Length: 144
Image (cartoon, rainbow, N blue to C red):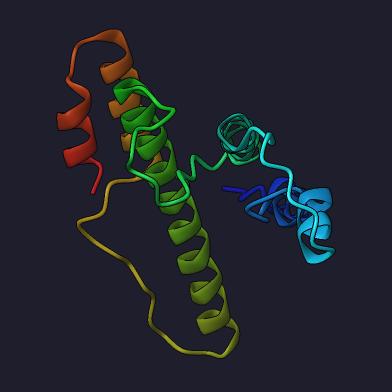
């Protein structure tokens, strides 16, 4: 299994740039004592949220936001399942690397986590939920 870290690392500068709660020009104006009351913060935050969602879609990160302000219930659960699948992939990768290290060090032991769904199993839950064969809440519950 290969974990795609290049996607995340190439997106970090864009996440950093959009992490400010207001645009740079607005912050600069405020520091100079210029207040622009007609700036549409609601529109800015909606577009900012959509942009962050787009940047992080391959990992399924939800920004720890469960407010549903701009999201449907479908999006919330599907994105959560996608993130749990990403976590499972990352967990498998870490375990594989630790096991390789143990082998190189001559340690005759292996880590083998039990009780966690595999990325494949979570993908199957996602497919079943998407097709309507399983409710999203139940798929979400089973993905832990």
